[in-house]
Image 1 (cartoon, rainbow, N blue to C red):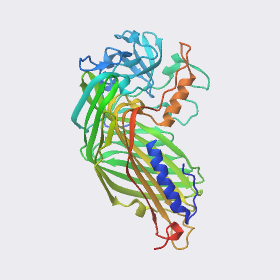
Image 2: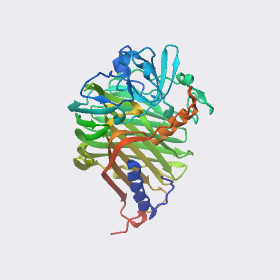
Image 3: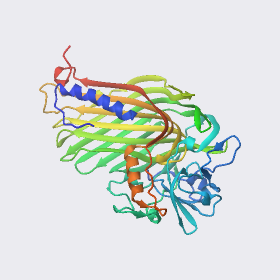
Image 4: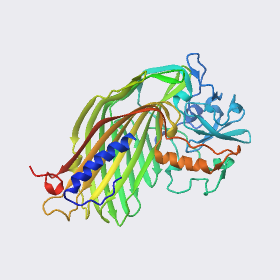
Length: 484
């Protein structure tokens, strides 16, 4: 964690070196838009239905509920609870411990269920692909990432600053009260959306020049605004996945488009308090692929954002921007236990973040912005996505020395880290898992048995460092550099 304040002088270089290690360690471990999808089109709103196919076999505890999106009434904003028609084919076969599979978005391990009139309220948790599919081969080339469907979460549990989740008072919550939570809104088109989480307003966009987020925050004492973007041009993707006897035997994913990264930010403090906020940007950018061997799949782009302030005084400002070329394509290959990353590295500085740093700090100003973008081919939605994925997380750590410090030099420092992660399965941010498990622990299932907590990760995952560097100017001992 970044603690600040830091003194100008020899500690600055040591601080930036520590930041580089922190960034690497951390990386390994939307309301308005143009065209709203028709609300009565259940295939768009709730996903593509499952179809039987002899080329794919599901696990024996998977219950395929017939009817697809037509039998789904609603889903809560957090994606936990699905209201489905109790008379749908095989709906009565659902039970805690089984895997519900209705559409590519309505799939998960059943944690509990209750009847509400003629409907069933089904609470689900995440599943790994191999918990759904026993045998099958799935592949597709040249998936074009053009005009996405945008699925907004609305007001999920993890987007709230309150200590107690909606519907909870610190006491047990009867299962039948879960519908007190807001429902997910209908999907939209247009590539742009607005979301809110933990006091931040985030404007997300995709996919003309890349995928990115513009964020703002203002609590009266700390003000932040910034834009983070993973740039690309006309991206496309190809993948292959083979599962036999419930184990992944082969997996490949390649996303091409010529990737780069951009950042711009302004921050100021006036008698405010530092904070660290980490959250998923609640807008899935989805490109439906269709059924392959009877299994509905989608290509999904999702983002996470972390902002951490470390202002060493009660008054000051900091501003900066930068742009870098990164890689021609990203991906990986996995076969019979052997993994290999496939990243065409072409790092290039286009606009220096270090040289752009400016401001009027009365004390040292420190800021970390971390932007994650994940490309997933698979099933499920929002934080419960499972499939073959490639993720790029870029961290920008900046420090600007006090204007009242050195007599002849104001120290500036930057630490940049780009970490890739490739996987087959799922991974969920720890803060999100904690909020969800807290809510689940408050529920009182009709069965009388407590709901088991969900896990943050499932399946296989491999980290890969793409780029890391730290710089300090001026090249002087007062900023941690020995004079040449």
